Length: 571
Image 1 (cartoon, helix red, strand yellow):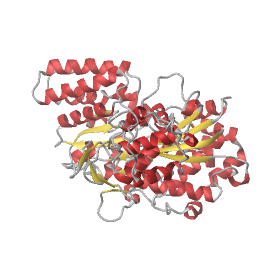
Image 2 (image 1 turned 180 degrees about the vertical axis):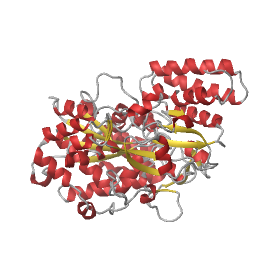
Image 3 (image 1 turned 60 degrees about the vertical axis):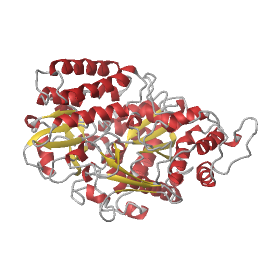
Image 4 (image 1 turned 90 degrees about the vertical axis):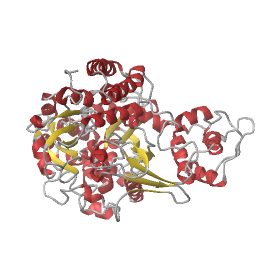
């Protein structure tokens, strides 16, 4: 593709699709080739690219030129953004209907992939083997492959049970109805937040001991305190719903079943930390979550729960949605900021940290969906009551994404503290042959553990005691029929594919890691290759810019040391 303005005109369909996102075009300056009314809105680049992809099935030169002219973005830069994401096609694919078939771990052990274009994990692990059908056109559509109508509540086996907190409304309320949400306690927490005031809300979150549920486990209250007290304005709130690692799907299930709870929690967070604008970044492979959340935001705004004067309290807060386009790295908060701003989703060096310099260079609160969902019970019942649930410093309840060889995959909610064995039994016990070989705990950025770990308490402390982590809440048991070798190659391939390429340790290390594993599967010298893997893995862990490179060897390392799938001595 020519990286200058090519002079290729957009088709009428492409122009109309972009104009629906950007508004009617202003007259174009023949010298600058831009419509000045749109300058300064580079953050609309990603939505505009989605509009082209959704309408005609790919991003043509003429369509890209038109977007660049509207937003005053150089074509070379826009091409760099468009080519960064898996879901965007820069050449016609012969059909406007594409079937994305998952090839990652949960689907592989379930007998997948199904027929279609090979795709990294689609976040549908409890439905494995899974696929996503995307069809471009005047009325674009995207839907997971299922027999019959999609039932989001199927993914919550505990639905309707007493004692649930985060999943209490899942499968009980109508996710498209604000009235249904209100009838089940919806917006009681926001009213209480207004009653006690913003500083008190932040204090309750601090007292709760809530830590991030996306994997990093950073204290949520400390983030909120830092942004609330920051003198630089405006402040921004970002809800991260881009769980693109193989294994987790809890945020998708929360949004599909209880979208208003995220809207309410974001509103409380915005009020407490002085943010008047929030963004929610939804994974591009989550079409149902996207539609249900968009409906909830519109309904909340129409009812006065979002806008310039929420519930007559003089509080201003509103939410914009952004759709990812197939890049795991955008789950890293600074890469997510770059993606929203219309740049390639590459992580930023830290410091400065997001609480000081985040989205658009301003103080930013970034929390994932599960973390924000916990804000509602904290505000309603107090931080001290929240802290009494769980075990030790692992407070509250936790959502676990259970898939693989179990009786009943899905999202399960338990107070911190039950053993790994107990959660697996809650999910119907070991499936397949019934004989457990290994459990992938925490996702592909986590670790493999063996049957000896089954009595480990599922707390942050318990996981650390066995050299593992809870990560994103993944529990993926594997029976003794599974050959770990191709799974390790697939994990390495995932990290190689998802590396943004910005730093050398990750860009080169993920390639060398996969190559060494492939050679091992073909009978390569175990001592030499295992030594190389260990050296490369330590380099990535110590020198990579972000968590992707820092954890790319962890699951592989744990499997090599614990199970020795390639024989030989420990790496």
